Length: 189
Image (cartoon, rainbow, N blue to C red; front, top):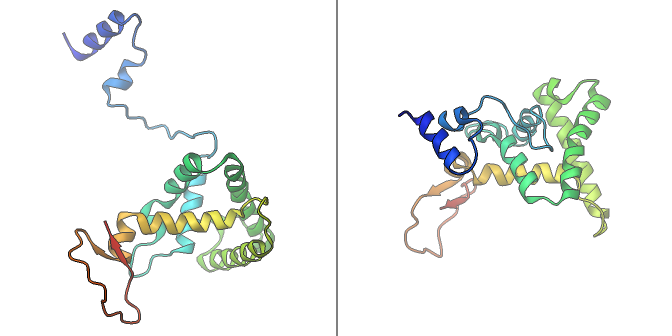
């Protein structure tokens, strides 16, 4: 008896047939990129570009290297309220609208300098919005994008080990360690 027959018989014993046994036998792998109803397949690379513009690659890896777009989609889907989810999703198209208005191009078609200029304008817009925001007002979409980029990057393995000073197993407590201007912050696991 092979695995396929065994799975089929177990399914019959349990009162039904196993639909898609090929799927289970293949190890649950699928080449089809699934969406969760909130995001499209194009949103992840778009969010990767936003993250990379906020934290570009320098002597340390950029946000795109940490797959920041995937991180953002999971966090928005799993942790945000439905109202904030809608603001975030609408914000994706608002970034494109702002790019069209300023440069007559979609965000993904802009060069690095234009992307930086656009996101700098959006950052100024969100700061102005935050100053006058009432408690019941929705959050600004760019605030959420920026916060998720920073959170995702600095909690990723690359962010912790390459951008921060990483100590995998911290030793004794030292309350006073000399700091030199330009030293990286600490990341402890």
